[in-house]
Length: 225
Image (cartoon, rainbow, N blue to C red; front, side, top):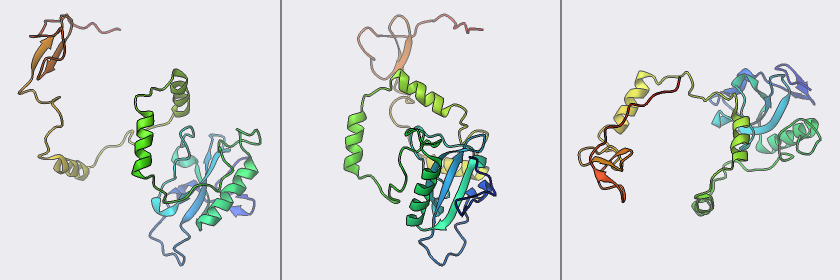
């Protein structure tokens, strides 16, 4: 089943994907009606994820680590200017219509039946610290790296092809003006060259045992052609 810009599904009218940037300055009688539901579409226009968003954020909440976000033209707003409760109900309805791949009932990558989660929830600092400690020192397996590579293949970074305006560059320059560099990695005034017989390294103090003052004359690096 495909989703088009002028298609209606289950009595719900779909909005063109060009409507993704929702006008938050429009007057609303009910300030609670700031939620919407959306679909991520494949290249063949079939949906692979259904979710809900909040209008004032002007962007979608990321559905999960293994659900890639498609280009703007393949994000379809299904229903907008609704309450959070209505958004949850519509999300559940649409997931039930298209079914879930993990359950073998349909084509969506959603891992739940929808209607879960809470807007505005923030993780407390204690929980953040527990997660940080539990993940400290862990390395991704080759299988995990492969999966992440497959998921992100073809995704273009948001900054790709874009340049800062002169005004933005000036703001960045002023924000960093007068601030010292952190650490000693750029403090060449007090550092000197050391070598271990094979490589050179610049440091304020002796890096470790086996290093001696001075810089070796190394052979030029031959690039592979």
